[in-house]
Length: 181
Image 1 (cartoon, rainbow, N blue to C red):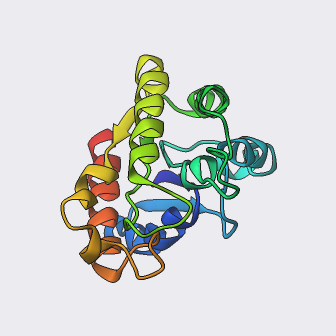
Image 2 (cartoon, rainbow, N blue to C red):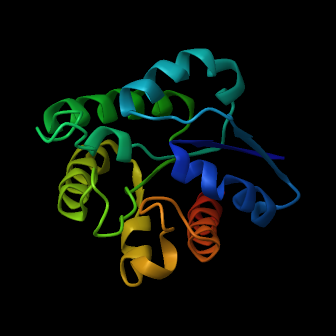
């Protein structure tokens, strides 16, 4: 039996059930019910879930929407340089568990989203690539997969996945996991 861990924010919560179904028999999938929120929160959560994550063959993870949101009109909640540092620390801990770590890029939002913008999402995704690829973390570009038809794949809440978006992301996540096992 192969062990897969899924970590991340509410976007991960959207697709994790379908990923578990698509992986099927022969896979044990660890996922927690909590929203991973910020990259720093994910780092802190690794302490709590260490025993459950131990022995994972593949870890698929995302952090971003909470970090880059602009709630007060003064820029991203997490400064870009701090985001890079937190990603590096999370990846460092995950790579101690398995060399098979995959980071999913932050998914796009509808243009009317008042707190998250695709311009900033692109900037934070670039930071993630620049930080994580040199560490050997694979990048699963969910953003690119959804970007072609945001209205179809992103809900009316302007951030979460529609059923079609869930299916597309779950397929991409499952495909990337299976490449490593």
